[in-house]
Amino acid sequence: MSTTATRTGARHLSSFDLKSWVDRSCQEVNRALDKFLPKATSKPATMHKAMRYSLFAGGKRMRPALTLAAAEACGGIHDAAMPLACAVECIHTYSLIHDDLPAMDNDDFRRGNPTNHKVFGEGIAILAGDALLTQAFEIAAQCEAWPRYSHQDIILEIAKASGSLQLIAGQIADLEGEGKKLGIPQLKYIHERKTSALLCCSVRLGGMSANCTAKQLRALTDFGYNVGLAFQVIDDILDVTATTEQLGKTAGKDLTAQKATYPAIVGLEKSRKIAQQLTEKAFAALKTFRGKAKALEALAEYLLKRQN
Amino acid sequence: MSTTATRTGARHLSSFDLKSWVDRSCQEVNRALDKFLPKATSKPATMHKAMRYSLFAGGKRMRPALTLAAAEACGGIHDAAMPLACAVECIHTYSLIHDDLPAMDNDDFRRGNPTNHKVFGEGIAILAGDALLTQAFEIAAQCEAWPRYSHQDIILEIAKASGSLQLIAGQIADLEGEGKKLGIPQLKYIHERKTSALLCCSVRLGGMSANCTAKQLRALTDFGYNVGLAFQVIDDILDVTATTEQLGKTAGKDLTAQKATYPAIVGLEKSRKIAQQLTEKAFAALKTFRGKAKALEALAEYLLKRQN
Image (cartoon, rainbow over all chains, first blue to last red; front, side, top):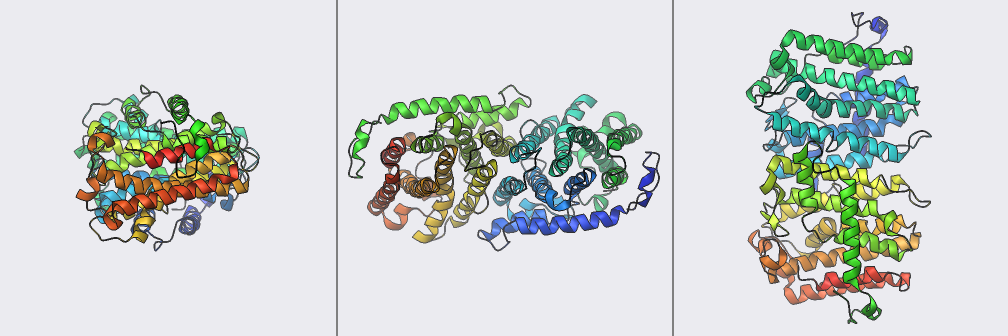
C-alpha cells in the first residue's frame, strides 16, 4: 500500500509508508475500542457479544484512521484523538448493523461474515446498534477538552453528522430512491449525507482534538467532504466492477436493488473521472498543511485506488 | 389530580395543585421539543414526520416532569433544565419505538394510537428511533454548563443510563426472560435497568441543571431509583387490572407473552404493598429538601395512584 508519484500531484508521498502507518493506527484503535467497550462477558453477555461481533469484524477503520491522520496534520497526537476516533467507528458500525436489517437493505453478509441479525436475530441486532450509537457518545465525552473546542462542540459535531439531517437522512433518501430514476443532484444529496457527513466529521474531530485553528478546520472540512463523495462514487463503481469475494459483501447489489448509482447514470468512465476530480479537490485542500498532512494525503490516494 | 393527605405521610401536599403544575410543565416541554426538533417539513420529511409522530403521541411527559420538579427542589429554574428534560423524553420515545417493533415486543398500539412501524413501516421506524436517540445528545449538549456539572458529566450521565449496561440491558433481559420462570431478584434486575435507570437519570439531571450539592444529588438518586422501581411494579399491576382502553395499549400483554411480573410471582396484594414501600422510601429521600420538593412529592404520589 506504499504510495508512489501520481498524476494527482502528490509526488512527495513516495516516501510515506502508508501500510505501516495504517497497521499501527489500526492496532491502536482496536486496543482502544476493546478498552472502551464493556467486556464480552459483561451482563447481558448476548448484547456485548453482539456489539463486539460487528465492531471487530475486520472493518478497515478508515474513519478512525482519518481522525488520527487529521490530528497529525494539525500537530496533534493519537492519544488525544483516540476517543473521537473510536466514537466515529462505533457510529459507523451501528449504522451498518441497522442498514443490513431485513427492513432496510436486507444484507446477509458484511465484510465476508454473516451480518449481525443473521447471527444474533433481529431484536438483538437492533439493540446492538442502539447500544453502539449510545456508546459512541459515552466514549466521545471521555476526550480531553481543548482551549478552542469544548465537549459541547465535540458532542454537537458528532450528533449533527449522525442525525436526521445528515447520516440518517442519507439512509432514508437511499431507501426511498430505490427503483426510482434519480439524477446526479439527488444522488449527490444521498452521498453527501450517507457517506460524506460522517467522513467529514471524522476528519474535523481529528483537527479539533489537536486544537486546530479555524483555517485548518476549514481545510479539513473541504478535504473530508470531497474524500467522502469520492469514496461513495468509488463504492458505486466497485459494486459494478468487483466480485463478491473482493468486496466481502454481495457485489452487483445496487443493480439488483435498482439503486441509482454514478455508473448507472453517467457510465463507468465518467464516474471514474468524477472520483478523480473529487480526490484532487481533497488534495488541494491539504496545501495549507505544507507537507504535514502526509498520512491524510496517502489515505486519500489509497481510497481512490482501492479494490474493496 | 390535586393531592390530599395520605398514609405516605406527605400531608403538606394537600395544598399543591399537581394538575396545574403538570399541565404547565407539559406545555413548556412540548413547546421546547417542537423548537429543538427539525420541522416536520424538513427534508427528509418522512423522517421528521415519523420522529414527531411518536414524540407528540400524547405521552405523559413523566420523565421531563421529574427533571423539572427535581430542578425546582434544588432551587433551579425550568429554562435551565429544559434541554435535559427534552433529551430524556427523546431517549424514552426512541426506546418505545424500538421496543414496539415486530422483532421485539411486536406491539400494534401505543397510547391508543398505531405504533410507529404500523404507520411508517419498520425501516423508517428503526431510523426514527435512531434519530431520536441521536437528537437527545444534540439537545442535551445545548444545555448551559454549571460550576459543579460540566457538559462531560451531563453526556456521560445520559449515555450510561441509556446504554448497554442499563436501559438496553433491561430490554434484552426482558426479551430473554420471556416464557422463563424468573424470581424477584431477576425481575428487579430487569426493572432497575428497563425503567429505574432512565427515571433516576431524569431526576438527577434536574438537580444537575440547578447546580445541586453532592448531598442533594444523592437524595435525588435514592428518590429516582425507588420511584422508578415503584413505577414498574405498578405497570405490572395495571397490565393485569386495567383495560386496554384505560391503558391506551394492549392490556394483559405480559400474561400473553408469559412475561415475569410482580403480580405473577408474588400476587396482586403483595405487589401493591411493594409499590407502596418503594414509594415511601422515595418520600423519605426527599426529606433533605425540607418542603422544597413539593412537585417531586406530588408526582411520586400520583404515580402510585395512577390508573394508566
